[in-house]
Length: 84
Image (cartoon, rainbow, N blue to C red; front, side, top):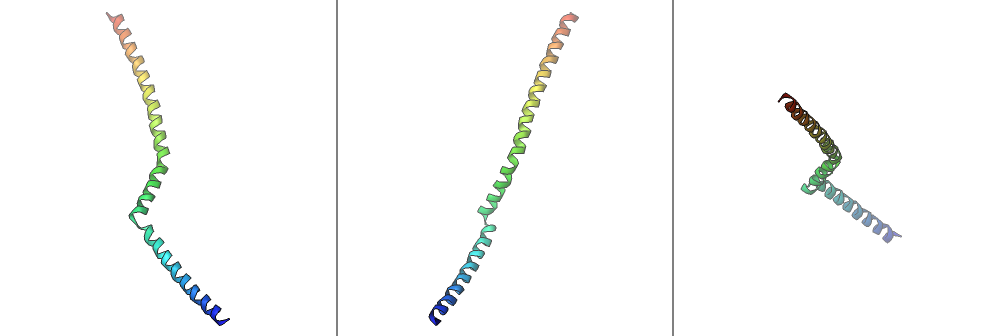
């Protein structure tokens, strides 16, 4: 029974050491350049839908304004024809 208990204590100690090393590695990875870039990419990707909506709404607004300009230009031509 003693050898099994001894082996258990040994393995438990190794497990604790490995767990601490793994945690240290995870902590150092949090501050690595790659992780920082991943975080920034995630932030940027989360903002994409908002900007996509802005661009699409801008395109719609531009088309409306172009149509208004065309109507006003047509009116201007008609007014000039009547003035002559």
